[in-house]
Length: 107
Image (tube, rainbow, N blue to C red; front, side, top):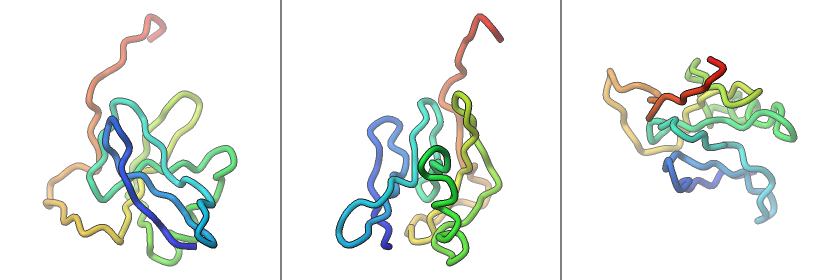
């Protein structure tokens, strides 16, 4: 499998697709409104049909676990770094930021 990258619309986070035999095999990323990732990082979609799909790419060094997670609804997603990115972050640059807080009457 090979990795193809692009960007989501808003926020313009990194979009990762696995391609096999010139056909899309899986989208390995997701986008969460209000969460802005560093350009070399992405929100991993490891739920539903994608359980464990990122693990082989972590093992071979294509992705790196940042240790950061974000929650959306009933799922918690890891933020992974794509090592094939040419982006060079500053030492103190955060892995992700939250664009805005969401108000809930149930909080």
